[in-house]
Length: 408
Image (cartoon, rainbow, N blue to C red; front, side, top):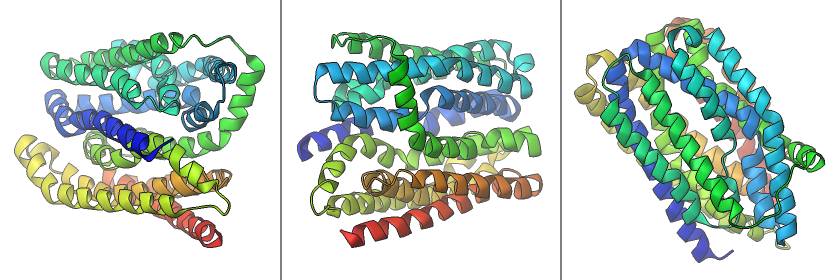
């Protein structure tokens, strides 16, 4: 994989995440204002339950399958690997759907928003079957972005046009579900055009699940202490605090976009550099430094301007979200750094087992601190818990990465 191709794909992925910026920067505040704090909190919880359930189906296949796709040497090997991943996803689908229904019932969503819950089942399944990893592994960045960006942009425009009152949460859920369905359907059609020999392979699926466990451990811990946070806040505080958190957390979505885009674009390149004898970590260090520096600059801009945006566009009812958003600026910088270290140094060095330990540390720290802080400080306590968790993980990964680079 050439530097030129990696740079081109990075641009594609940044454009894709640029589309996603429209949601946290424009659409989410408008939806929050239209629905009001109480109903918007239901949407935040619905979205959290969807993504927690998707985790059980998506498992750790994103990074595992992306790397396996890139490493496949011929069509038969690629077809066997893809078949194994798809079979594994289908095997895990019943667990994901059951998790969604159970969680929605426990949160009271089945009573308050029955249509949204029904749509959520489709959303979980289609999100779980996403084929973005396949095209990213083959360095077909344009295709990977196209099948995600177009449905997302269409969804955002339709939300602005069609969601007009606090009784229309189901429309937000429907449009999000349709976007997921469009992305997965287009991905399947394009994958089939490659004429791979796809079939159900139980033994290969079990092997894929085992190989993806380290990635699942990291992703699982992250999801449980981030996506599940609105549920924890709802249980320990008030619906308004959930709404404030859901709005402020979008700052994190914006600020970690660079590392999320750089991972599929640059990882194959850094992995090849790291495999040299002796290992060459210079490119990885430059990538980590560059991503962290740019994230810091963006965080400073958002920190300075978020107060004006919330006060002038959302009004006093959402003023409490300003402090949370500024806290998320700090959280996001630490998170961008530790994700960069993990993706570009830890994983290429063959230390994926470390993800078990740091995932456990992150989960333990954040759940403990949330239990202590949320009842008294609401959403602010939750963000502080997140900050401490990310800091703990960042310190551990930094120490290990320093040793890896120094020994090279």
